[in-house]
Image 1: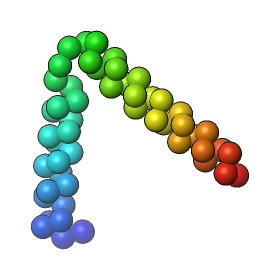
Image 2 (image 1 turned 120 degrees about the vertical axis):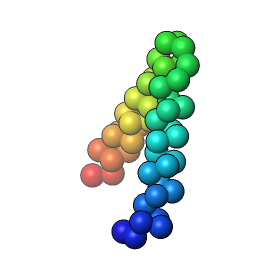
Image 3 (image 1 turned 90 degrees about the vertical axis):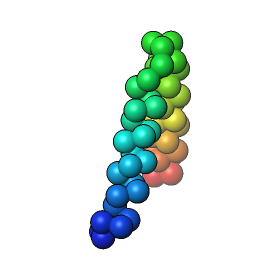
Length: 50
């Protein structure tokens, strides 16, 4: 992948990571809960499709 495409993606990932880890402990728990719930729903959708 050319650097012109990779640089904005890396910058976006870095910004997302910094925003994700900032905030209070309660906010982090809510974010982890939302991500975990989304992963669980995706898992159920994949298992149901097979």
